[in-house]
Image (cartoon, rainbow, N blue to C red; front, top):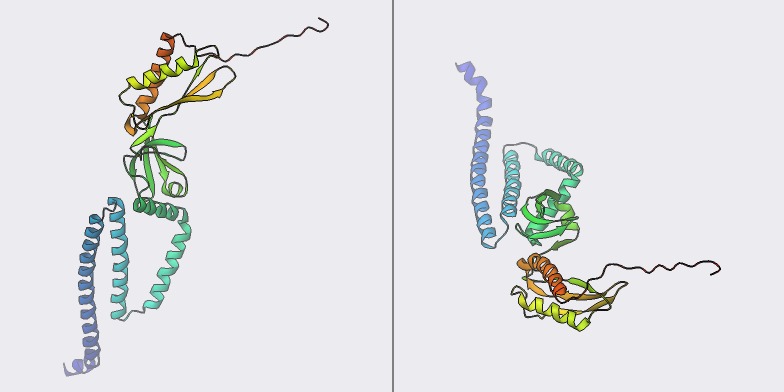
Length: 273
């Protein structure tokens, strides 16, 4: 027994020293983990108070929490005697390799963060982007999901949306409806304009202020074109657009105002005649 104790004696002091370091490192890890959780709760509450989008809020919370936990693990490893310089270099090289491999996805990720942070559009808006028009159903961190007006589901990478042109169709409370009606050169121009103004006045969805414009826009090949521009609430845009197309045609028919077909005069010449 004495011989065993004699052999173990040189190991006792290092074991006590290392054990105390390990115990202290575990305490630091546990306390640090708890502090990270508390900090994430405070960050989440702060973002919620300032109205940050739910998706972005969850992502930022996860990102900051992940970074802090990685730093905490590195501190723990350093305290127990692990050489952290090579570990940090390895993590850096792995991060660079992953970044190069996923540069397209990272562009979409950055685009998603920008969209969620600056909010050029939000879920429920109608946008015109990348050749598609539809309702935004969901803004994810890499993609935006749209439902087109004919009920097709479209997934657009956020990198394209953040770097391209996006038209938020109903972002403003009012919109102008632009319509063009052609009448024959033989018809009474002032009468046609009066008929159009009567149709406008009969539609309660058309705003009185600003007043609708009705004026001549072109002397075309087969018709005199009248440009009509009433203002409506954004939600009434399409209803008024289609209603005006129908009501003006019916009013023109009642008043014998002609909407002409395209016409072309063809002249034949006989040699020697």
